[in-house]
Image (cartoon, rainbow, N blue to C red; front, top):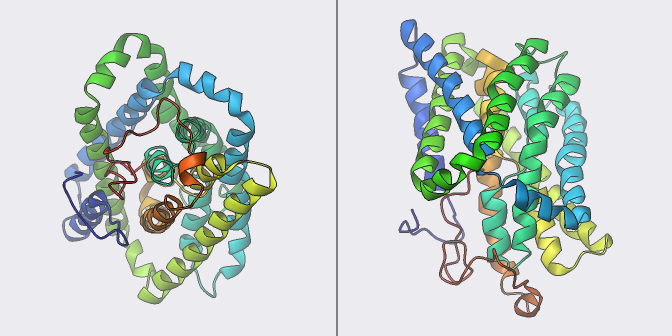
Length: 354
């Protein structure tokens, strides 16, 4: 995927094109009847396998080592699971002037999703920040999100979200948490295999997400919920998300400075604390919202692409800061020169979904 060249100011992830194509396929040829039952069952299995792989990939040793930088990780967690949701709740005042209730629910769900892993690492590396801290921060956020996102959704969306119920929490445990823990328990025996075949398994988990998207949007088409969204509402949603992203980028950068973090750590805080994971959010929305998942994930899909474009520009500029060369950490785990996440290349590789 690194062979695909694109302008540095327009970092459109090719995987986003596949996601949009999947949405288009669901709009033209939604699964119905027996086909819908088959895709729904396959999607459920794919979600469980996806989180099994997440568990098998997360190194418990690396996570424990990262606890030494607990102030940075706590800052990222607060940004992800406290400050983001507060802004999400504040956006309720935009209903019904700018947003419809279903779009607002999707926006609020977006603020509850954990941070990214790959893109946080890639952009931190481009900006010459603290890459090991970004790795641990993204991993901790994803791990915490398996528990915190459903609980926050139950508390903040439970009474309003159509299709959301306490049964959804049970499904979360069975489809997400149990497979994740199984992956962690089996990592001792399968960890080497997973690492050796990470490229092939990466294609598998991305294919699983495409299946989840197709299933969710097919159900949305069958329910006729797309008639609820107008171009004007979509434009309003994009505007609201642009403001949300700008506020979080400013807050994480200057807030980290006020907390006394150095330049390299501030970069890790900014990129890990201002983004949301599409890979984690899509499966969770599918479980939590059922047939209404297509509208619930629409704000997340839009925000995901927006954050990639904006953060790529910021990371590129940070790499040219006068103090970048002398402040950049030289720790194991930093991306080597010439790698896909190297500033020389100027672009993160395509594995920026999570």
